[in-house]
Image 1 (cartoon, rainbow, N blue to C red):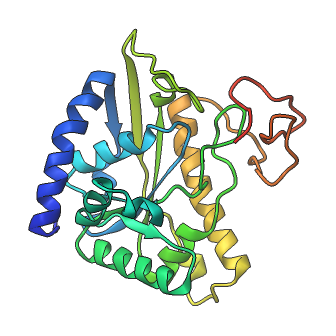
Image 2 (image 1 turned 45 degrees about the vertical axis):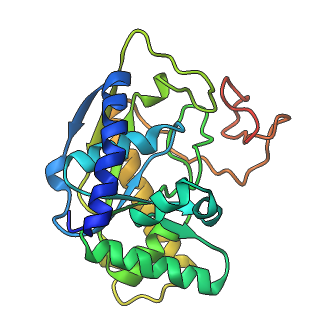
Length: 255
């Protein structure tokens, strides 16, 4: 990691707590890690449980890639947490133009230092009843195309058995296995020299989501749905999305 001394020291401290915990919670199986770029990149994983950031961060850190997440700007003001976030160059997400420029600057510094920016293109836990990746937001594609940053698709499966989607209770026994697979960087050559308009960003985002879905299908040895879940569709009585002609199932209640 080409991190600053302060950042490295803080990551070592956090890892000393998180890694033993993750090893206790789950066994792990990681594949495709040789595809991680030598320099900085955007890691784009699927999102199916609240603990999967720890799963992806654990894998990246063990392969000497400092993980940097996009975090709500308000978290940087929390006593104790804020200094940790700043020390490890986590990236604040702000709505103002000035705030967005600061976030972009931090992101560029992370990439220059060889770090991994972890962006969940779905923006939140998937609403798909079967936990397939749903329609993505364009933020990761925009950052990648604007900065010429590689996007590496990542799929993981198994962590949801420890903490189910929307769950509040850990299921520790029997011990579960978390599997993570890293794919080849997404090919954005089709978007070279194109304006960064809605059509371009949507197509680039679809390319990212297709790559993630393909990796997850391999992990699950199942066929993904022909149509990707769109959270903008009408919601069921509890507020969660209902689509593809299905009734809301377990774990598909309000956001």
